[in-house]
Image (cartoon, rainbow, N blue to C red; front, top):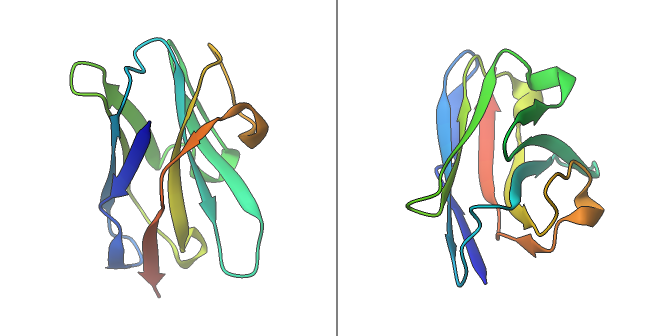
Length: 119
């Protein structure tokens, strides 16, 4: 099983980025998929998850949108109104559980993609 995250980059505050995550090796249509991030000097932080519903950490609500395309085995994170506080390495993850918001319940992880927001 492999997860490949992409779409990160350097953007100015207020800008937008769309992260993508390609899953291969198995289908994840019934699994929860999520995004996490790790900012410099900080621990891993939950960002959002999706299965039959979606969930977001409070700090990104109204700015980020998680979505998926099960036919293509793809996961996305649309990030709008970015701020320097969003600077982090973003990781996509997949869980065998029908719902998961904690990192411990995710078995599969992508390699991460860097998002840098300049002020």
